[in-house]
Length: 468
Image (tube, helix red, strand yellow):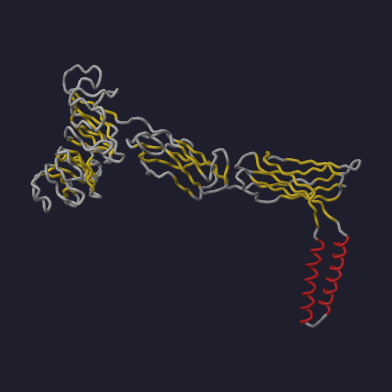
């Protein structure tokens, strides 16, 4: 009864009564062995956790997982696990990586089988599910048919399910034997002479049946982001943090996801694990789509969730293309501020702020300017006249100091008179703001902007209005 690892073919599990395949085989029982065809090493796996050999009965009917890590087998031994006191043949699974042996022919509450033995295991490729036949009466509730039934055990959750029933879970009226599970335990085939498993079974012969453990897709997963909360808004943050959650009655077996700029991508059927968050850094401007699928423990894949993220790293540009000159009529003038904001990505709206300031004329400022000019000319004349280099250097220092004072005095002073805030307004076209005033003089204005992603403007546009 050999069983080969289906994925790589490297490992072969088999039963043998030989005494010389491994050292210290003195139990005089049939044991389960695994052969590594690459290293030629042979390992006995029908042992307890500490490596103690089986006593009290033979171990047979090996079934190995796809990569060779897990080996299921039946055994009448009493010392493979603690608490084995039912004096029946049970189903065990050996993890060859951790060397842990687990009894799987137990109820969902871990009660050992009573009323009959469990035999002929078949393990799924991933090693999670084990199908077997059993005449035990306490593995599931309501087992009163007194027949051999087919069960499947989830070794992770511990749940056990009887499969040899009809679609209404009416139990079989004859023995069911020789279970064979699919890759992920989603389907189990077996044979039976029962006549109640399907309608129209009138041939009075043994038939082969296929039980579906779970063919239902998981629900579409939910995706959230702390950094980019809404798919309808724009964000300047190039670091994208995503989290998600999935649900399925059988349990979540993993997720597959992908981030790209295509709206309808379907991730492949390769699980990225059961993690529920990921961070992407240095994402550029554009509409990004995070695609996510969930699979359950039976490899049923959900529909794809598409989560859009809008990243905008482009700064808007402001313009003040026109100056405006006007006159007061009857003491009142209508001033116009012409402005424009361009943003090639975010859309046709932005936050705009316009600051208007009036030039202030001051007699004190003009007096400071005149004094600084006289001092500058005086020290310049002295620097040109003297032939002493040291004195000339000192005079030039004085000259430069008064030049700075002169420039400061000549600098035009403005006082803020108006601030216009457009909270969310249309852009990408020439706009004008009008206001009526009795004041005259020179008014300077500055145009500032932020887009929806809060990117500040690349420049601050400026121009002026003259009212006579």
